Image (cartoon, rainbow, N blue to C red):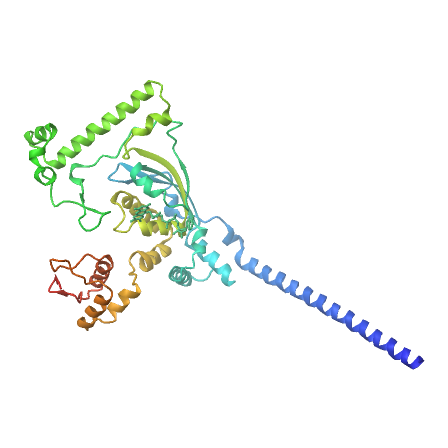
Length: 383
Ligand SMILES: Cc1cc2nc3c(=O)[nH]c(=O)nc-3n(C[C@H](O)[C@H](O)[C@H](O)COP(=O)(O)OP(=O)(O)OC[C@H]3O[C@@H](n4cnc5c(N)ncnc54)[C@H](O)[C@@H]3O)c2cc1C
């Protein structure tokens, strides 16, 4: 019996010791792990948070532009740089945190930025931002503020009198509605003439007077614009004189009236904005602003990022799976035509002409860009 007790006691002691040893080992492991993490963080801090990398980044090119009006819309509108944060190096700095290495050589930094842009690793670009003051007509502004990722503070026409300026159209700049693109426009070859724009039989007294005075339709449109803007302003100011509230008096002001706003956005979302608004499909007025922002601010501010953006976004070519199918048949036009038929791209109207098809037209534009023949076209004629 006493032997059994001794054995049980020894087993219990052994169990107790092994539990204690187990607990000690896991405590020790945790301690060592913590120490390792602390050591690695310290190393990282050493690499990333040196005084040199933590000082505020300055871009001499942008410093020189702060507070200067950059004209847009033929000198009527403008944008002004108010402030900026970061530059190409801030993008590299953020990206290397992901990979645990500090800033390297200039060429490696450029390569990293180009890699991030290609692979759509976007957050490092969000480390940089621009704050602008923009002076822009309401019609362009209406499109501008659809970009929800920016921070905005706009001049209030409830609080203050509406800005007494409207965008004027040069008489040579009236654009015609595009026949192909319902949202597009094109400049006429020369000045618009009345027979193109109006039926002389139905011409109003205004038109007859203008024709009598030897005006072109383009000049006439500009004269009418002037009259309308003058009247709209007069009515607005009359309402104000009558004591009508500014918030109501403004209701008939034209979309050409200017507004003023602070617009702050990070570089990633700015490039998204520029990608959409510098595109040929964007309206000319907002495109004008986007061109100035890209060429005069973003380019000197973050030159590597800007070049990567041009190479991988703005000047790149996006191919759909359908485009790829057509491209795979380059050199075999009859096969391409079979594919295009399967895709429903070559349906004919009753008159035997190709029906309009947006995807086909887009694919044709891509083939042209690649200097490749459009397989279903014969000597420039659509088959
Ligand atoms: C040529 C052209 C024609 C257009 N025509 C019309 C038109 O006829 N009618 C019309 O109403 N608009 C029109 N638009 C506006 C367009 O539909 C977008 O609203 C505008 O371009 C803003 O784009 P975005 O939403 O990608 O940009 P941002 O608002 O800057 O957003 C950037 C990105 O962030 C993400 N994001 C932001 N907010 C949200 C959210 N709340 N939920 C989910 N994701 C979010 C999205 O991925 C988005 O792409 C047109 C735009 C262009 C360029």
